[in-house]
Length: 340
Image (cartoon, rainbow, N blue to C red; front, side, top):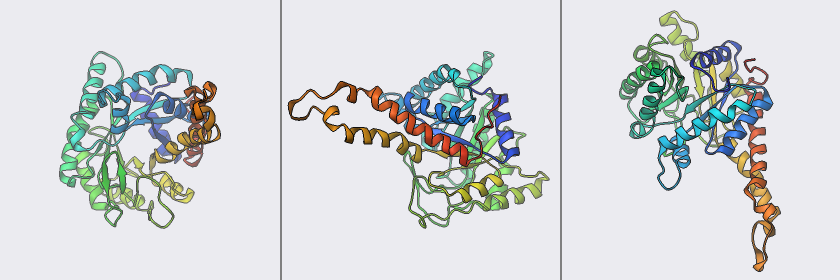
């Protein structure tokens, strides 16, 4: 069962929360990065989450048509086949989707999974993300209610981002300022609108200074202890301990202490993209520089097919990214926790 069923995905998240660890959620943009993520999880003996952003799906759809749904579906179907060779379980997820892309991405994918479930099959994706951070909280939660109902009907978990994450991700950008911190009032309004599981399960991307990308020390002030305040503030009102399953966005470049604090306060998923992009590309750059006279036909020479063959540098890229994924598993304490 390499691709999690809805029941197993719920079990994965419950185990993470109870064990105070989190799953790395790795963005992929190709079959090569998919295999790198799967390999990293397998080498760490960790289950995990594979995710595809709108930009990643557009790229996967091919530069001729750039169709996001085609790209997402194609990679998901591919993953269902190739993941069977890895002794781990992974969930498939779609990353940040803003309001103007819902009709061209998440809503059609929800419809596809709904049809699969109606036919007695499992959904194609196990979770989808609605990024309403650019909207007012009222509009964000109103759309969230609609999407949560559709997701629950298709046995899918919804991820919601209720307040901004700094930096830029696939065209959605926010300034790095004091607004990057979710308040207890924001969390209470979220619980009131979306419930605490009775209307469908959701993951909550709350903001505690998170920023996409990597910045030099001192440019970003993370306050993961804020998550404890959100858990307590909502938990006291509803009589439920640690009611939220949190997502850590902008995880690349975070310190071990920041990650540890986040895990202690209910983070079950942490997104990695920037670090894994670099880990995939760096070995390729090294290969090209070291073998420039082989990958290029310098001064009319013929070059070296063995050095410019995509399989040669592609294997290096896969290994580099797989190592970074395994490192993420260790940092998030998921190493060795795979479902047997």
